[in-house]
Image 1: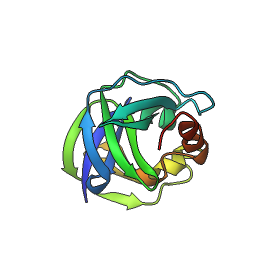
Image 2: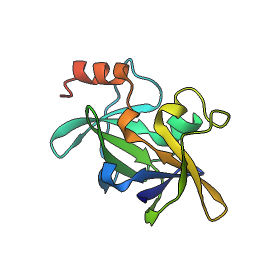
Image 3: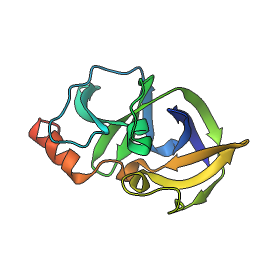
Image 4: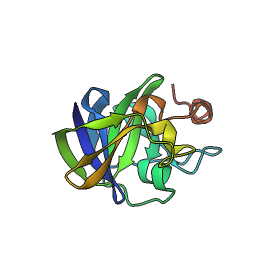
Amino acid sequence: MTALVFRAGPLLCALRLEEVIETMRPLETQPLAGTPPFVLGISVLRGVPTPVIDVGRLLRGDQGEAERYVAVRTERGAVALATGEIIGIRSVDTTTGAHPALLGGRSSRLVAGVGTVGAEPLLLLQSMRAVPDDVWEAAASAGVP
């Protein structure tokens, strides 16, 4: 499968290329009250207010400095994922399904499978389920379509 590979803190992650809209420098982001800690807030992407999710905070519980935003398609609209370094477009092999012993809670909503790049573990993310309903509700009350 062809994927966009990037870092989220020390983790190596990938998104299926068909889910990616574009990558960009981090944009001004306004906080949203009442959202989980991994939600940085909303940014305006191409004229549309868009929720921003910190992938490192979602997967590891810690927040790093976002180097890039990756806009992805979800079932309810675009979402920006705050990430570290973009490694590039690569062909990746993963085992489908996240291993329950490795992942739990919120992380399992985002991880579709695990694999490796060389000797380094890789998490294949599924953006379609990245944003919980309460985030969409808070974004809607802030004017996000």
